[in-house]
Image (cartoon, rainbow, N blue to C red; front, side, top):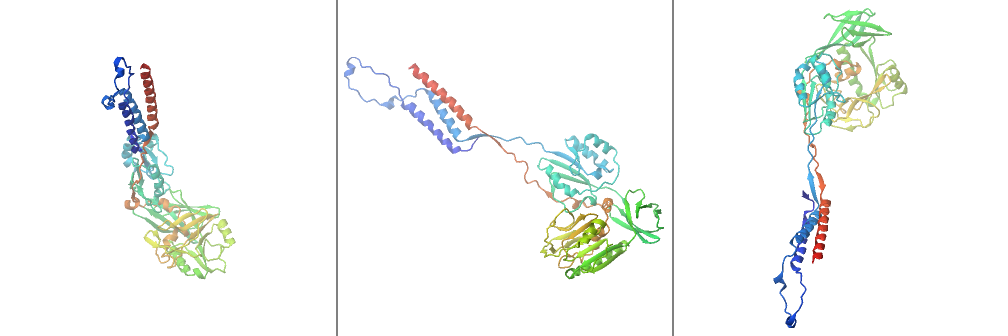
Length: 505
């Protein structure tokens, strides 16, 4: 029991009043003078010599009533600490591990945790629970197959929300394949045990196909292992009709005609690649303010063409002239508004448009993380992005650097800086062609087949302690009303006892 106002216990000193009354109050008997005594002179009697403690238990009762009232005034409460709730315990397994023979290696650990009361979930949005029957079926005969790559860093905040308390425990099993990690990692909560599993995988796929001449076709084949990803260019004879082309390693690529389009498909692979018959066309429209940007774009596009062997036809046009209507890419480096005719071309013909800021920028000290290091960004546009967009490049501070918005069949890319040295180091970076390659020649399947490994040091973000665990709020029960009730009952008993004694006199 705790007193919220203990200083009010001084009111208990009021028990001195009934004690004094009891000591002072000597009940006098009736005096009857008889005989010659009535002629004697009365003398003063010493009252203190006749003090006696009368009705001891009545005194105790009255004092106890005052003590109870004094304690009630001090606001007594009874504190109860609730029992701690048991922590939530769960295991999370990524989809590619559930579809891999490597699952046999971690099955004993998972089974041991399940016997200790853990629940099993897939490491996907929603964290769907895997019931015991399905787990036994999956773990007994796992099969190796590629699955669509999620972003495991992006799921960490949602996982942390499910286990916010220190007594919670989560085990996370994922592969260490680079394709599952994008963007900037968030810190890892200390009650989450992340166990990366090395997957020994090797993939082959057809990246691009281009008709080089009337009788020649070029294929770019991708090959990925834990150590890295390589591309190989192969040229083969081409008759112009649908056919099957045998490669040197014994594999075959089948060509099929669908309407006016020619498609290539690698043997034992469901992926189809559009065969480009004409060079890639890019138009750069500029005004005087952004004329220095042209040479950086031209250099990047030429490097991509030389590396891939895919011909790219580039034209540079002053703002006053009109670009080729058949262009695949339009780089609009102008402060003028994009013509309405081009907006229709984007929607109907699938043209891609690149826009750069023409407004006054804001100075920044951010940098952009690329594969070979950091690229400094000195100025960033202050415009506000609206509508739905996908962020492709971002600065170290999380600011969008390059975003894309879908518009009909085409896309609009918003680059919020420039390539000139006064804006960024992108134009002087040897990584610029590498950054442009997946934009000019979309590679949606490249990341799917990429099985390179990421180092465990890079995979696991920093550990974040749980600053605030469950706050055990003490439950307080106020005892004041019960003490007042007890004092009232004792007061009634005191009144009955006093009345009874008077009646007997």
